[in-house]
Length: 435
Image 1: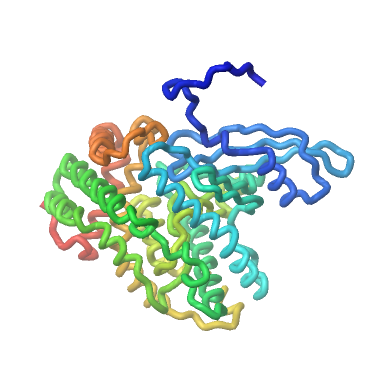
Image 2: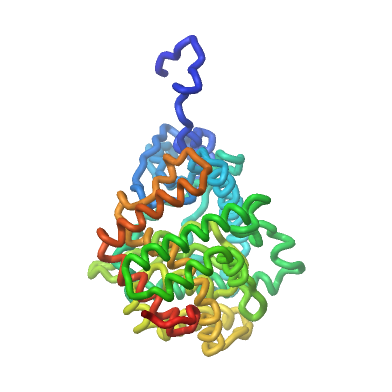
């Protein structure tokens, strides 16, 4: 152990608490026991960071390299740990508490029920990482998961935009998740939110401050998108629409998340290409998928997950060309699960297409927030880990400057955004014409 000074450190020299420091030996032992059984004895462990700026937003992700003994031999295993980011502004602290409540609740309470329902009807469990340990102490939350890299899973280059093969794997798994939740809810003696209150919490209702927090943040994103679009040129009426919509966009967001049968499922909630991993064959073709980061799981229309994915993670041409195929693949997967459970599908493919377009506004709102992140380089990103102010105006100004720089410096941004606007004009979500 390093020498310690007798004098207490001053406030100015006190070491800042890091997310990695939240991991304890007892937590590692708990994960090891859950994974390898009572016979496993921890020998050593070390935290090894592997993510880069732009990979983590609501939390910090790192890995834990573990050595242990079992059955008389020395062995090793690696886990992935999701950690409270230990950010200083109160707004970011409140957000971290809320999303960890949701993800811990999902892994601890909902995922086991969903998987039990699937196994009971002869289906495979959902394609998530295995969860080995959960620790919910406020401001010190830790989730320890299976390291999917060891099974060959990896992130897709988000700046490229997912193609048909990658997207089809994702929508099929979303169909299985949504269908499993329909079976689960039908078998419950009470309403979903009564048993799992956290599933009903969302951006504007996380806590008593959330509405104002996210009203300001969502409006800032929309105004930033308007500034970028104005700089691109040629879409003046879209700029006007975004600026007029910004003050009420959180209310529109909430309205889009309202659900009712038959379009009522448990959604992933944050399904974009940063939160899916793929495994490939020797020819580089994606053959399997894992959905990660359930921090914004919610009860909503399945069309919100589909809009989120297709408008944040695909280039416009790919989305346009294959939209019918994606919706059909999703619906087939959804119906196959229900069929194995001897249940009728609550909506047809044509019904789904209509609902998808009913939720296009949700896709637009998410696109203007997420697309600049998807195509960005590290230097273009707002550094959340070094923010020390709750002054939203300061954060908005910083992000707007970075966004406007992207217009000049990032050739991927313009076609991605404009393809979204063109579709939203065509679908009359934005009821204007281009200049």
